[in-house]
Length: 100
Image (cartoon, rainbow, N blue to C red; front, side, top):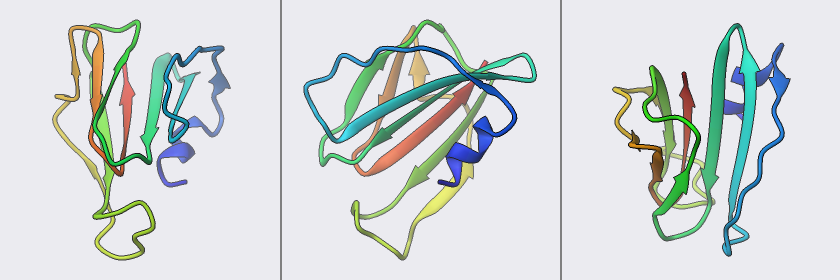
């Protein structure tokens, strides 16, 4: 929910996620001239998602030790490194929000 707040006041953009894992979700939107992409990975494996951007100007990571964790969960703005050449890398039990 913390990362979903970035979409408040924006407009959701139609997107398609082609993924065989039902524990991975993706959302896209526009807000204040930025394109936002949020990928939530509730699985135990890292995932790579193709996105229409080549690089990100902003990035926030939500991570924790396990999907049901209530402690040691963090949200941090970090250097935009999860998106490389149009592929967004999302670690297990985490979420990545990028803005361009």
